[in-house]
Length: 189
Image (cartoon, rainbow, N blue to C red; front, side, top):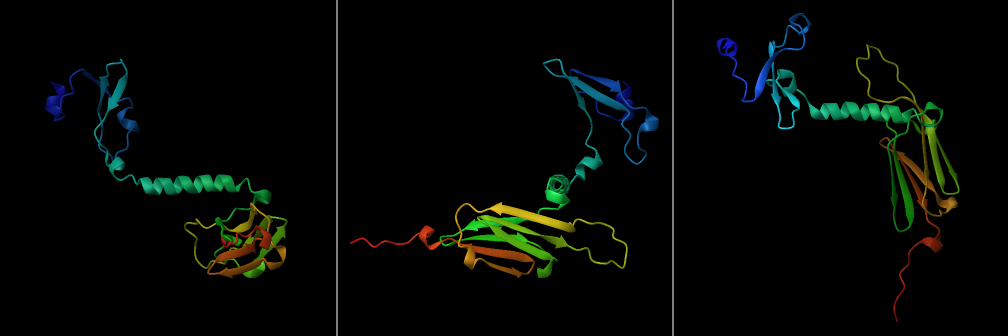
């Protein structure tokens, strides 16, 4: 038997040994050469390829793959923002007396942010400027350029007492609810 002489295990019962579908000159020289492919027939008559575990599969990092996919999806979705601007990460929280919006803007100065409130629509726009580099930039995952974030708060807000502060790269906007919309405790007599 040719397989026994080469040191490979015989194919499982019900399997046929077929030549590798790619010619030897197409295969990479750094990997182990697969001269034969085992093809098994399942009970439904389908052919399933069976190959030994390759070293590349053992080195595959699923978290790195998810990170790459997340970056690609975010880049694709950022193209849909108005004017080609990117959308910063944000959280909108509702408390008993206010709506709190936190927007991540690391590396952005206060002067580069424009904050507008129209009714219950909050709009934050600005620009994250690229800093000058001395060396060669090998990899970039940080987004630079114009940004735009817009949210409609779910209820009425008191326009006169809206506060905004920026600390450690996070813009925090606190929009209080009107006094009539705030929950109040009613004593029972």
